[in-house]
Length: 384
View 1 (cartoon, rainbow, N blue to C red):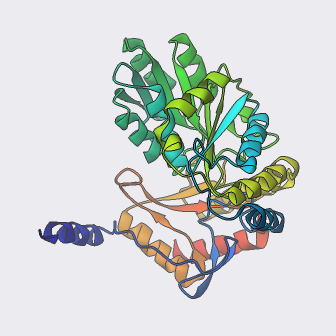
View 2 (cartoon, helix red, strand yellow):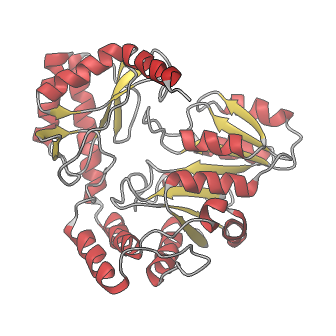
View 3 (cartoon, rainbow, N blue to C red):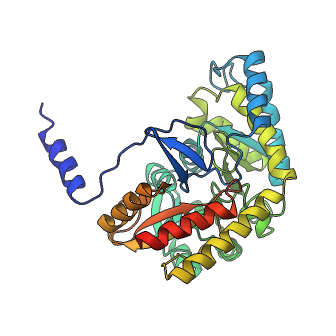
């Protein structure tokens, strides 16, 4: 068997400036990093609150590793559900204002497991066109009738819901869209779903920790109850600075996932020390409001500076601040030019985003300073 066809496809990706390459990070996640032996000021991490390298979280991880070891050892349903896993689930339920929560090893597994536990070929799933790949894959793999509605367009959603005769209808959307940075119109989406007797599931990976008075994400930001928003997913590897994901919801929902979510049942639990570290992180997310205030201030400063430079910023009020470039080759060239000036920013190209919409995905963190944002603006002014 020859891999010549695969090699040709890889060559074609390189020629189209769509080839992906890994860079080796040689320092902690923080604004100033070392990548492939060179120092950079980074604006491409999802560590939105600056917690990934926080000493209290590191200390909690070390202490739990000393007490419980490293590996989870087994699945949650065999012998891998530790005291820290259980406590974290209870604390996340309180945090989100839901009766129960359940941990998954990562967001992809949470989305695949949840959608496939709730739906089958008798059902229908309705997804925003710009949903994360894990949500799209989950819907397709479920076997349910798969429908996509126009981005953040409740009229488009309503038209599709009105036509379904499925046993169950599940509306699935990102809370904050990971490549555009805009926020889903959840109040309207939830109301349209209610009118058509559909459930709503929100992937709040990029909203949890950042939005809401206490950082509880889109549900808190829009004051949406469990009845309005019955399936809430959040990740822990972004604003929380650790790893993993969770689903929060009713007693019936969580028990259904325990019984039927294959990505929960058939995988080893996350290391207990990660759960312990996340418990420490959760306290900081709730109590250190200044981190969200710092983020808001930096976002305003960056957007104001980009407007003065004439850069095409997408309409985002979140830490995700994409600069629209369009052409993939130009986006790559700008990313390389910024790297030459000590700025580490990733160019996002198709198929991650639609053709002709390549961009520089700038992400801000509460650990950035105003001076660092100004350095980025100066660099952008030189390479634009």
